[in-house]
Image (tube, rainbow, N blue to C red):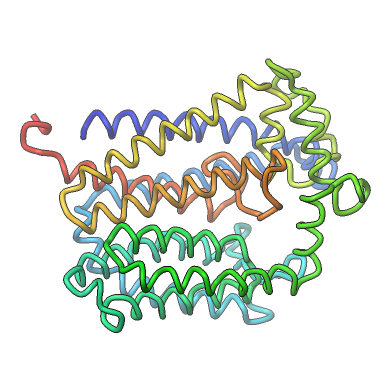
Length: 367
């Protein structure tokens, strides 16, 4: 397990380093044009990175079973924050969405915290109630009620992408824990029409679907962003146009330092650079799942599985969106995209993986 921890640490550090470099490269022009400070987003990313390191050190300082004792109170606090962020005047509104609190000059998004908290809650519940896991009322309904309330609050922000991601990871954890398919399948099937209604109920979500199907039908409107992403990726070729030399970041590609940073990586570093990022995520997922399989108890196993699944899902969706393989979801690329809450809680999730690996070592491995 010690070797796994070292390897996972190295992969994570490389991804974080790529993120720092690419956030600056992708955002410098936009930051200078709008804020007259080309390093504005870089400096904020470094602050979030520092906060993530501090939080990670605190998580790794104690046995994860000690942390488990505080999951329920943390869950209740996070619920309160999800309700509070919906109150006008308290939260920060951007493009009609109430997802952020403003703390000094930094932003905090409680839905990002809930991703990690929900994973730990489910791991705790499923490990404690494992003998009742196949019971509908005692094993299935309690986590479904918590999950339903959580997803409902996040949908009100609105944030469909995060809601779907949390739901998918929850289903994975429930299935692995031994939940009856007779309970899971009706829930999954029943959620499909609800998802379709949520997609087509909002005009902007419907436009995203239309842009995914045929972005060239409205190249200056709804299809603009994905077309610019295609141009960025296509311009990179095999080795890229060079670090810092992207043309699409010159105010052509919206969100180039957030949701579409992978497109800038493809343009500046080419297929080789983009492929290297994908390989790093594959290594991260493989190492994370190995830690999950070797965890000392069911709680550690399920928590590690949930954390790795969430990061893997976000990476897959983000890259798929940038390459036009999926409709736009608004999920960041873990460790790389600019974003405060997402970066901090992804780092905390990795710290929890380190914790699980550390305290699951055998006496022989510790020598």
